[in-house]
Image 1 (cartoon, rainbow, N blue to C red):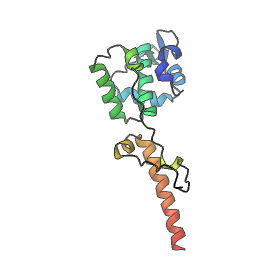
Image 2: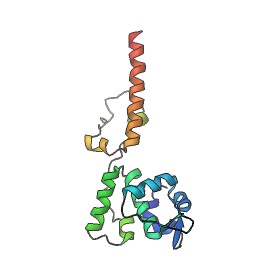
Image 3: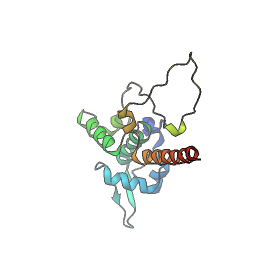
Image 4: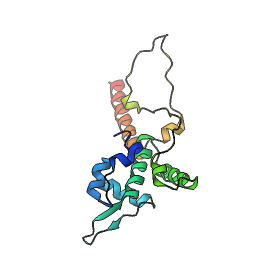
Length: 165
């Protein structure tokens, strides 16, 4: 689902309204994530059915796809994604399709969390590994950053026990 946000019209069924469960399935996120994004992004305004169920318009689903891309693929924070969406609208991307399908932009390096990096002994002929800059580290979502820090703490505690013994 990595490129899903880039092909929004292809994956979104041709319907007027979508229930939260349908949007959750389309975006592959839990419904509570959608409800949270509603509170953080003022452009998402689902109406409610008579039974109180959220009804998203196609425009809402397209914006949600863009939000997911910004948060999960481009690793923006919530504030960063909110600013980026405002910037896109401000710069003339008035159509939602233009927001969801941005023009080709230069590729950004992917920052791999330290927990997923395989430790390999350096050889003289290997290129040096580039350390992430502080701005790249800040782009990791808060929840993921917290998990990484907790794992690092646990690893350091284990290391400290080994050193003490």
